[in-house]
View 1 (cartoon, rainbow, N blue to C red):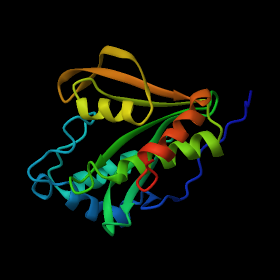
View 2: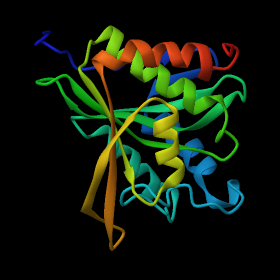
View 3: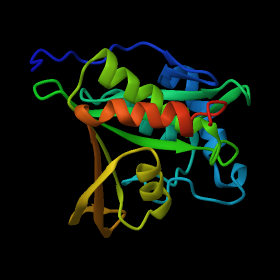
Amino acid sequence: MKKNWKYPERASLEFKSIQLIPLDADLHSQILFEISKPEANRGVDIFEFMLNTGPFINSEEFRSYLNKMNNDPLRLAYTVFSKRLDQFVGTASIMNINITHGVAELGSIWYCTKAQRTEVNTETIFTFLNYLFDTLQYRRVEWKCNNVNQRSKDAAIRLGFTFEGVFRHHMVDKGKNRDTAWYSIIDSEWADIRDHFEHKLLPGNHN
């Protein structure tokens, strides 16, 4: 068994129609703030189910949120750029990175409504999984979400994650108890899941 897992490099990742660019608050905060506003998303609070995140009163508060992600030593935060839409559409992170055990979590994922239910999330998750399992040879990748966030739970299953259970009263989120649903993919499952992505999920590759 591999025992010297490496920390992911702070470098861009790319697939067919998306680029994952390491988050830079100086470069990205204003445009991300603008696309995250409820008024830019048909009145939807896209941070509703994100742990103690938003709503943001102003761009300075939003920038602090981005800086907090970048200052987390166990996280690599990315901006997501859609080539098809020709714009930044959200953020995603490799987080809770544990190089002792070869484990990481995918989280802090949000997209403006224009990019939701498109190829963006499928390609983003595939790119992360391919990097973590095939390049870095990690053992396990996790997905966690608020147990009332049905869309995130459905996405985890569609993308090949296995449901592991619910941690009851796991955290306090915006003044309320949060139950957290846990999902994972382990290394022995990745080959089959990668095949499922390539033949069923990724745009243009459907049988």
